[in-house]
Length: 173
Image: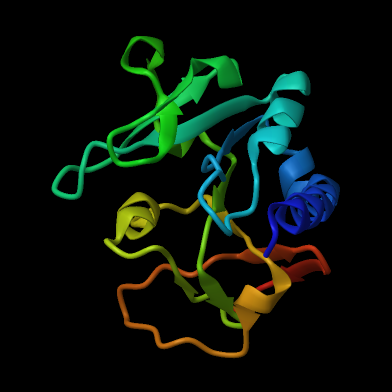
């Protein structure tokens, strides 16, 4: 998609997410920084959540062989680009937090299916984050990435909701 289309569809996804009671009732959200090509843009959503006095935390990537940590952010100004090509808080702006304090977790995906199975960018980064969490998991994705079925294994973690530019789908079961 063209960057302008990504931005326009991301804005629609934000509107749908903001209408979701699980978002409205959450005082703390965990989200990704959507800035990679083809990802739902989340910076406007982060600014919205901060303006609503919600706590916003994001994952901090330390490399493929190390578990991620989590940091609160107070402003998008605290972000910097890592050697891995992702945005996250700069070392001096990290505010350690516990993911279990989040009311919801917004999850990126390359594809997600009608049963809530998702495929990410590979490497299992979000699988490690989502493991053993009872927090509401919401995939933010574009409608063409929301497909009928994906291969899944027993250890894969499903999402509870899928939000696209066309609306919200609650995953049953």
